[in-house]
Every structure is written in structure tokens, then in C-alpha cells.
Length: 567
Ligand code: MFK
Image (cartoon, protein in one colour):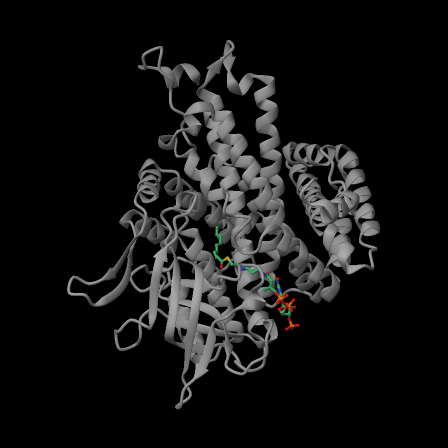
């Protein structure tokens, strides 16, 4: 292989790594999709997934993504004769990448009536896994569009539902995307401090006044946002959910001023802005006075968090694919990197993280599809409620470590902009920040444990999976995972809320790793019946690394409290 790639190249020049197609070159993805879909639906999905896989990593698509990254959005506040415009111009390469995704069904597939039925979310997840890392973060508006569509279907009236067709269209000429404007100057996590005010006018229409401090995909035709109706109570119970459009039906712009575009570490093709709502017309979603705004937008958050996990998994998979491709063509110390034991071990560990990431994310998508098709049990609803924050949390952390490792595996060229690896690393760094940070996710998991007994459901589901694993090679990881689940159950016995919050992160990471291992064991059992032992190897390695991190050091916490400046 090395000789072929070097054919015709001057001996001193390194052959470039060839990124394989995102479907044919990703065994872990194909196995995960097959495991979750079953053989019949899988054979039906393969042609579609192969097509998208080829497009996602085709040189022309990668060139579009590189160009989009190098052409950041521009704000045009005024027209030539002084009229306020507040127009944001994005790269046409970014728009083209969006069209590729929309045509492929990244916003439409879960809402279509297909033979996949409740399994549509698995096929959709594979589409996103492949297209997302090539999309220059067009995956961000796609996430919010999906979240908005589901939220409007569940909580909206006929007018709200009227826009869902546009949000779920495969036709880029008519498709809309949606934003999610939550973050204000008080921060992205503590939404209860939202300062935007909703004023009801004579005639019944609502107008919003306030500053939205971090709004991504600001060129979207609409957004869902939170505001406090005048006179409503403080805190999150006083908030209402609104649908807001950038343009009014009469063709004029809504009363929304773009203060400035954000200059971000990554996601550079994606417009992110500060917005001033100056009496912008908005439509309440649900009763604006019943205090249910946060509960309603949680529908959107839970969906965008799964998108986030898919973004993490896709980025990790892409980093791994680049590192593997490089290891195939790079020679050092007398052999290909792919044959050097130290390098192989590093790539194998990356592959384990990718497999674990896929196991968690695909399980979420499986449950989400069942819930959307009305075939899920109450237990499965509670399971997804608990699994979503820990999947988002764990995949986010693994992806940053993973793409950074992939960059190191590629070496100096991987550190250079024209390799495109720096953009991958930068873009991955937003993943744990978006949609709730690691700590916010850990606390959300505790919320789910308290409210819907998510831990018991999760442990029961993991133990059921482990009980089905009979292959002799699975004995060790099954044993380790059961022990980890018992330990986590013991650790959950904390009555003091403050102490529980202090332990939330290490606890959530442990639950995520143990659940991922249980799912990988089950998938490994299935794959072994087809003669493939690689997923058993991945589960074994995951368990060997240790599933449950040490608890947070409470003595250190105390020292921090008392002597923060001298610690
Ligand atoms: C690759 C693609 C990636 C995707 C990119 C998308 C880019 C988008 C960019 C952004 O918008 S980033 C900003 C994201 N912001 C957040 O994620 C907010 C983080 N903060 C939280 O998650 C807080 O925990 C939250 C605001 C949800 C809750 O705060 P509170 O004020 O403490 O709420 P509380 O009282 O616990 O809950 C209020 C209600 O919501 C309760 O229901 P009830 O009214 O029926 O009692 C909760 O049960 C419900 N709730 C809260 N979180 C929930 C939930 N319900 C279901 N699922 C949840 N996760």
C-alpha cells in the first residue's frame, strides 16, 4: 500500500493521507448501525448511507468545508443609503454544505413516513455522523431546527405546527432553519436569570425587549427563545417560550438589531451574534403565563444535546480516520506508523473511545425514535431522560481528548492550518460548552435521577444487556461492568444535596462509561455471532481502563473554600 501511494512521488516527499469514505471506511459506524437496525432495514439503508458517505469525504466537499472555514460571516449593518439592514452574509461554501445535508435528510428523515419507522433515527444518526464533520458546523442550525420542529409539534398550536413543514423539508429552496436564543449576558447556564421582557399589546400580540448575548446560526429564518411576560414571577417559573421570525410576513425585518458578530476560537463559518430585541414581534408557544417556558424548551434542549453527542462522535470518528490514514502512509523507524506498537496502541485507544461514543449516542437515537413513534415504554422514556445528559457529557469530553490525540498522531502537518486538522480541533472544543457544560449536564443527570428515577432504570437496562452476554471472552468486561454498576449504586446513596452536587461530575462520567461498556458488551455478543470479535476487544479495553473515576476530593474542596488564594 505504501509503495503504491508513493508511486511517482519524489522519494523525499511524504504521500498525503487519503481520507477514506465516511461509510465504507468506518467499520465501527457500519457495525453499530447494523446492530441497531437489524439486517433487513440495514440492507435497505446501505445504498443511501454509502452515497452520503462518499459525498461527505469527497475532495470537493472537503474543499467546500475548508473554504467555508476561511470565509467567516460578515455583518452588514446598513444599506448604502443608511437604512438599517442587519444582514449577515455567510460564505456560499457554507450554504452549499447545508444544502448537501438538507437534501440528504439531516433535518427531514425523522419526520418522514418511511419503512424505517421507529428506526429512522438510527439511519439519521449515521447521516449526521458522516456529514456533520464535513459541514463546517452547518450541523449547528440543523440541531436547533430539529429541536424546534419537535418542540412546536409537542407544545405548539396550529400556527406553530404550520412552520414545521419548512423546518423538516428536503428542498433547500423552501427549507427553513431555526435558532435557539437562550443565552443572555447573565450566562448560558443559569437561564432563570433571563432578562428579556415580553409585553402584550392591545390586540393580543407579543413584543420582546432584551439582549440575547450568544445566538448561533443567526441567519436562520426563525428561532425559539425565552422571555419573561411583564408581571410574571422571577426565576425560571416566570419564563415563557416564544417563536420569533427574522422577517415579518409583510417582508420587513423584525425589530431585531445585530449588535456584533462574535469572534470565536472555532466554528468560524457559523454566524454567532449578539442581538438586541427592540419590540420584536413573537408568538407564544403554549400558554405564556403558566410558567412552563423552561419545561417546553427542555424538549428542544434534549434533542440538541443528542445532536451535540453526534457532533462529538462524528468529530472523534473523523480525527481517528485522519490519524489512521496518516499511519498507513507515514514511514518512521523503518516501518509504517500503522505497524509501530506504540502508535497502534494509541490509535486502538482512540478507536475504543469512538466505539463507546457510538454505543451511547446510538442508544439515545434508538430510544428517541421509539418515543417519537409512540412505541416506547415509560421505562424507556425515563431511560432516555437520564441517558441524554450523560451521553452529551461523556462524548463531549472524549471528543476533545480524541481529536487532540489524532492531531498529535499526525504530527507537525496536523498542526498546520492547511491540513484542516486545526479546524477540527477548534470546532470540537465548543462541544462541551454548547447545550449545557459538563457540570450542567452532571447536575441535569441528578435532576433526572430525582425526578424519574433514571439511575435505577439505567442500571436495570445495563444489567439486562449484560445478562445476555454469553461469549467466554466477555466474562471479564461483564464482570467489571457489573462491579462498576454496584459501586455507582452505593455512591448514589448521598442524602446531602450539596455533597451530591460536588460528586455529580465524577458520578455521571462513571455511569456513562459503565453504561457504554454494557452496550458494547451486548453489541460485541451480537457481532461475535457473525465472527467479528473487535467490539468484544473494545469492551474489554474500556473495562480494563477503569470505568468509575475516583470521587471528587471533598478535602480539596474544603481547602479551596477556605484558602482559595493560597491552594
Ligand atoms: C453539533 C451540533 C451541536 C448543537 C449546537 C446547538 C447550538 C445552540 C447554542 C445554545 O443555545 S447553547 C445554550 C444552551 N443552554 C443550555 O443548555 C442551558 C443550560 N442550563 C440548563 O440546562 C438548566 O439546567 C435549565 C435551564 C434547563 C434548568 O434551569 P432551572 O431554572 O434550575 O430549572 P428547573 O426548575 O430545574 O426546571 C424547570 C422545568 O424544566 C422543570 O419542569 P416542571 O416545570 O415540570 O417542574 C424541569 O423538570 C424541566 N427540565 C429542566 N431540564 C430538563 C427538564 N425537563 C426535561 N429535560 C431536561 N433536560
